View (cartoon, rainbow, N blue to C red):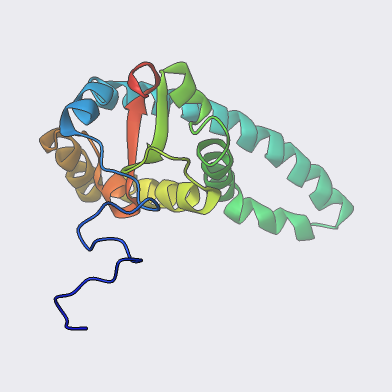
Length: 173
């Protein structure tokens, strides 16, 4: 059998593979991402309120636990805010609703780019970590926003790195 012959039991080299989802047409992505950047901004503000409330709740728990452990548990205050923010994003974006509470209130969801499938918890946590890293300095934040404004699909820089897309729930198939 020569290199140009094709075995009849194997799929044709150019045939679509059933295990790889087909890419969505660009017009579908544009429709699903109309108005997403403004909605993301408002969702972020709502999520800051939720994260703040969770931080207060966990602070009280650490305070009581610190008294019981003679101050040893108070070391957890050093990682409280980043841990709550990352866990919140991992559990909500990586959960069944695929969105934080603020995103749900704004009608947004996070999905995989090619298939709009579910985002797992690890990917959601890395996505949140990259977002908080980008917002920690003005230059990275500005670069992140400029990327989102310049792209048709309105994906920010940290979305590109993790290969996710934020779409409107009313336009998502």
